Image (cartoon, rainbow, N blue to C red; front, side):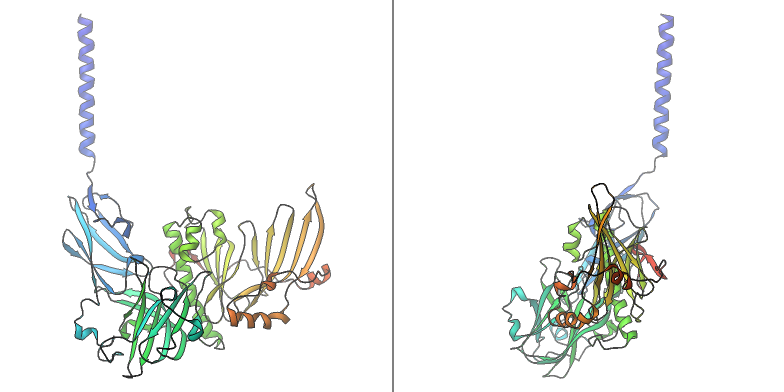
Length: 493
């Protein structure tokens, strides 16, 4: 009995000791408090559900959620926060977490709805209004939504991807000096006013009610990418407008913008005969948008073909599982003038291996060359590019040269090496492609249709090995690109 009492006392002591330790551990645990995002948590980059009191909280209100005709204000428990805009990210929001649950909400007000009827009929710059009857003469809609006859319209193709949207700019009266603008968001001030840099993508003398303007464009994201400027023939005044895409139903509309919020930083590139310096500046403007496109894909982890459908792009990186996998230290961009013509190309690399190359065709940035994920691209000092592609029973080595008029690397010659059943090297064949003598025909077709003839990528005559080796590069490979950076760290040039 005495032995049993001793055991019970020991058990009781252990239980009390255990309870005491649990209590102490609980006292040392830091309590966290919740943040109520009012149903919009997905709009905040870097947001967490809860924070410790005293924690300096920092997050971004996603740039893709921002509309340029809307003013944004942020409140923490009804107290207004200071928010600054960071290009490529959105509004930076900071606050110190208190020792209680909080509510973070965003208040949005359409800037156009704040205008009085009198103010709404004035020009973006004040009295310089293109509307003589209280309404703006030009409207925009998708061609699929209106009865637009392209044969009776002025048509221009500014698309930069495989898929595009056709925008119809219609007018109730004649307008002149039309400029289609390519926009790039540079800042949003504390009052929600957006500032854009722009380049002039196309000019047109005039459009009338009977002859609208149809523009084929590619939308890479939700931010405004295009605008229009025109002079009203009735008033002689000029107005500037942004093409907005609704986040609700995808419809398009025009919103006036004051000229002071626009800055022409890229040259007028409507004429492909401009100087190399002007073309280089224009190319860099497009490359910036393309790099941001890759950055958006990696930030949001687009899955396979969701990437191509949402951003209208193709990349051989898909074969490596990008961008679902964490590859922030693996995907880089480089700016390098491959053919030494004064106009650089944009090179996207993965683990240091070239994946995609973009060039400039005189009007826009285009995908100049890509490869399969099993292949490889080598760039040589003399401007030639070698693409090697393995297959189950053969191995191809093709050489490419940049056609600067269309901004594509076209094949020149190719060697196919076939393997025997035992894996040994079998027969080899050598083929010619379209030579530079055919480039004028290719350029003419591209200028007329926006497409490259299929035969430009088809084998021509079979040639001898001596002729093949006489036309490939004997220069050194380019091993390092001077201007290189991580996609995820890109904030502009």
